Amino acid sequence: MDVIERVIDNIHLIFIVFCRISGFFSILPIFGRRTYPAMGKIVLAFFTSLILLPMVNDAVNIRVDNLWLYTALVFHEIAIGFVLGFAVYIMFVSIYIAGQMIDMQMGFGIVNVLDPQTNIQVPIMGNFYYILTLLIFLTINGHHILLLQIIESYRVISPGEGIFNEALLWSVVKIFGQMFLIGFKIAMPVVGAVYLTDVALGITARTVPQMNVFIVGLPLKILMGIIVIMFVLPMYLIVLDGIFSGTYKNFLMVLKAMLPRW
Image 1 (cartoon, helix red, strand yellow):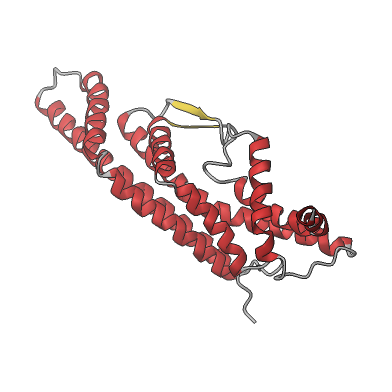
Image 2 (cartoon, rainbow, N blue to C red):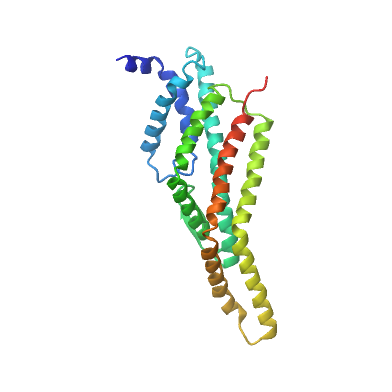
């Protein structure tokens, strides 16, 4: 009974914690997917809020009698959770960028698949790399680390303390730069091999004019791209280590950027 009474007395605080957690889960690569049941997201966010309640119970003084301040605090916490989730999600977008580069060189540029998460068309190889990355991420329990990080965010920023300033803007810009750089590094081996194939086809077209390079070139580039992907796929684990480490670092960077500086 004491636990139930405590939950009832702190229902307003649970809702505030729930707002940040739900904003964080709404955009994550795993929990934010549309294929993940909405009820599952709500239940997971609610029980995570209950776990965090003792941590933030004495860290914030919420005035429930002031409706406007309470409403502003609700939207503020949702925005903080969304920004933290965006810092994680944007690193996974680099895989789609790499897939787009690879598809354009291999000849798959006009062939896309529908992503149920974003409801947009994504490149074939990008979708392949993205699914592979999520499987490895779940295998190494990376989602557990994300849950620990959102819990740690309450140790750094209590409800109502985070600010949106110029430092946060530059942190997001820096994450965007890392996103394009990682995407270029992932796609570089395949793009380089296909480019050398184009050079070889160009030389062949000059030396053997009777050969129809356009007919031979398309399947040859696809074959070369698949072969290179098969060879570099074991080294992709090293790239994933950098992506996951960068994801955790970006989370902390954005979190520190929102710290109030008095």
